[in-house]
Amino acid sequence: MRRKRLTHAFAAVALVLGGLGVATVTVTATVTATASPAHADECYSWPRTLASGASGSDVTQLQIRVAGWVPRGQVMGIDGAYGAQTTAAVTNFQKAYGLTADGVAGPATFSTIYALQDPDCSPAHFSYAEASYNCGRGFTGGATEKENMKRALWRAEALRHQLGDHPLKVTSGYRDSTCNASVGGASNSVHLTGGALDLVPGDGATSICSIAKQARYAGFGGIFGPGYPAHDDHAHVDIRSSIAWDADACAGW
Ligand SMILES: [Zn+2]
Figure 1 (spheres, helix red, strand yellow):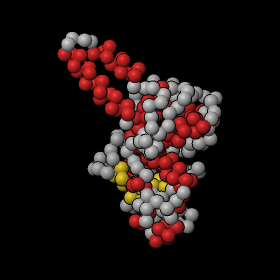
Figure 2 (spheres, helix red, strand yellow):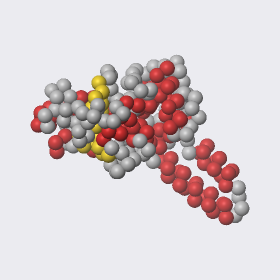
Figure 3 (cartoon, helix red, strand yellow):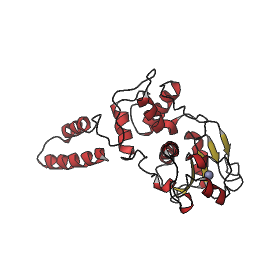
Figure 4 (cartoon, helix red, strand yellow):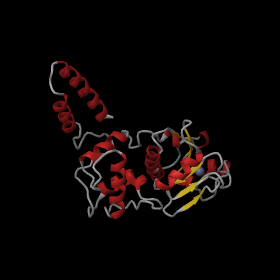
């Protein structure tokens, strides 16, 4: 958010200076250097550049945010160890956002993440609230469920970008046992942990099947869509660590 405000402010300056004959290129270069301080973000700021071999809680924070960019069929191990999987995810993230794709998370990568995250650490295009309907009961979970929700939402943010930045709606997210039972959820549903989302298109550019199919490239362990019982009207995605996918009524599944 803060980065966007800075960008707009400097864009206005560039316009004024442009009218005075000052080279806009020079001003733009200044903006880039000014807009990426390490401590600009309200949610979390990375203190150092991270690369293969790094370890620590800052790696964990990075892994949560790029977990939707692992290769197909993988689920990010959020373990604080920057290995081949994290390198691949960072590289894919960088490619997707037009950055130098070197698999090293430095200022440009972090700036892009800062622009994507809200002060409450949810990703820009999803909120905890929309994943907390819980049959009208609101969020009744604890810190673990909230953390799982965050991890699912960041993968949804990746999925949304992969689908061309078209909006996706969450029709069900976290469910407590009372809500889960009332909607006929499985007794071991990942919704109970906060780590599952039921998604539908937010506009006419995507379909339930396109969501389910693309989710295979967005780091989701569980994917259930059309063809799986009771999943014709939404795509269920979740952060389980194993692969369990079924949407075989979708063409090209
Ligand atoms: Zn579901």
